[in-house]
Image 1 (cartoon, one colour):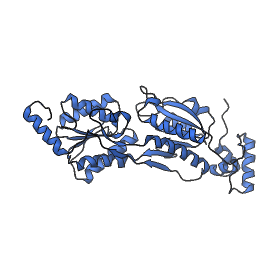
Image 2: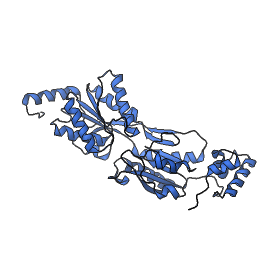
Image 3: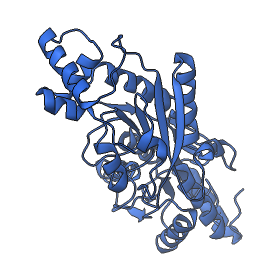
Image 4: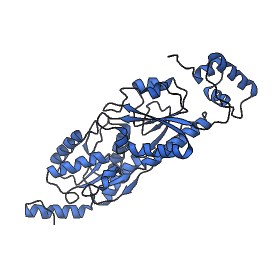
Length: 357
C-alpha cells in the first residue's frame, strides 16, 4: 500500500510550519495569499489529498480503546463510560465515529496496532487508556492527524490530554480518612512502576500523610491491577501491620481486593477496617458495605475529548492542553470514624468472637 503524503512533507517542501500548512489547506483566514499558493502547489506536486477548501468542521474520528486480555473495552467498568460519552457527543454533533480496540499488555503498552489506526483516513484520533510508546509511538509519529489522549500517557507530552485529577483526588480521599481520626492508613496499588494514573494517586496518598505528620506509609504495592496480586499484597500488609485501621485503594477494583482480604482475616468493614476507593465504578454501590470512593465523571471525559479534538483541528498552532476532571467524594458505608472502629474492635476482642455489635 502506498504511503500517504503527510502535512510534514508539504511543510518541508513549501518552507513553512505544519500549522501554517493546515491553515492554508483548510482555507482559514490569516494566511498571506502567496504563502497559501505555495502550500497548495507543494501539496499538489506531492500528491497530498486536498480538502474542498470549505471552513473546517469535525466530521469523523476514530476511537481507539485499550483492551486487556481478559476484559473487552465495552464492559470495562471505567472505559465503557468514557466510550458512552464519546458516542453521545458524536451522535449530537453528527460526527462519524469509527471504533477499534487496542490490545495491551499488563503495563498498558500496545501489543498490536489496529488497522483503523494504520490506514483509516479520519479527522482525528482519541486514544483511551494506553501508554504511548513502542509500536504505538512509531505509528502515531508519522501522522499529521490530531490525537487526543484520554486517560492515556505520552512520556514526551506531545498530545492534548483529558485526565482525572489523580493526585488531588487521592489527597482528598486520604484526608477524609484522617479527619475521621485514622492514623495508620494503608494504600494498595501504589507501586512506583504502576500505570501513571495509579502512581499519581500513590503520590497523593503520600503527600496527605506527610502534610498531616503521620507515620511512614503502609504500602501494598502492585505492578499490575490484577485482583490476585492485590489480594496477596493486602493480606501481607494487614498481617504484618495489624495496626492499620484504614486503606486507600488506588482504584475501586483494588478496594474490592481489600474487602476479600479483610474477610479472610476476620476483620469487619468498617468495624475493624475502613476502606475508600477511586473511580466510583457501578459495582461500588452494590457491594456490601457500599464502597466510599472518589467519583470520576467518566462520561464527561469522553465528551470533553471530542470537544478538544474539534478545537485542536480549528487551531492546530495552539499550545498543548491538558483537561483535568476533578473527582468528588461519594460517602457510603465502608469508611467510619476511628473511634467507632477501635470501640468495635475492642468489643470483638473481649467477646473473643470478633463479631461486632
